[in-house]
Length: 391
Image (cartoon, rainbow, N blue to C red):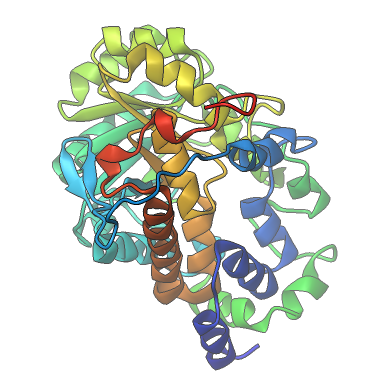
């Protein structure tokens, strides 16, 4: 499909699911499934979404909602929405320059962008885009190397660091080996036909080449060639990462520090006790432990434990603006969206990423008006229908 046709389709997009479908049509199956898939039977992947669908709202009526304010404070600074773009690794395999595309879209829409450690562009290069930038740290086994990553993010001016703590080993993501998606990725007899049938993606790859992981320059990988992607990442993570290691990172990082991958209140309380500024209630988008609790169901317990002491963010399953409202009502200060904006970037580049954010913003505004709330601060648990028919 020609680029012009993709842009015409983009103008007709009305939902994140539409962007997902455009991304699926543009990408080879192995690439799309790497972004879209989850671990094992993908129970958690599905339940993250289903948890939002199970929440019911009790809207207020006869409230003047001719104007609503969707802005809020996230990690000490104002954002146009209670939303940040989540870290997603390896994404330039689907769209050349995807990290830069998402950073620009986030800046244009006034929300933070989180750079993943295994990005195709360096910490320093993405910092040149400006805007509110957060950095996601994968705690690799080589302590000296990860401390260099922390120092680089600090020098480049990133305002927050999110340490991923739910990756001592990689999840078993079965779509990847079934599709022959290995590192380094090379088309082969199992996927060559699919690649040929995706000319827009293929022409871009022929022009720019397959991306590497720029922030890992100089790192001594132990992963053999031909390993599936999930295994390749997991083998480099520090399975010995513990609370003492987080204390060391806290010493090295003077700005906002969050732990990403927390679902238990006791873990959140311990994070607060050692000086972390927040947690992201996350199960890695259903890509790690299958049958982990849906993040929206874990959220209220974490929020009750630490919501007055630190920032509580949520990711996993956010596909609609009303999902943001539901997460706020259940105690989150904001959400991170990974696949929603990624589908936008894959479907239509920067215009697609902006379109994803615009859809979420428009839907949130409409949901707030229909719920009778005029500001994000007014979104609270009283909007939620409790179990049974009575509020």
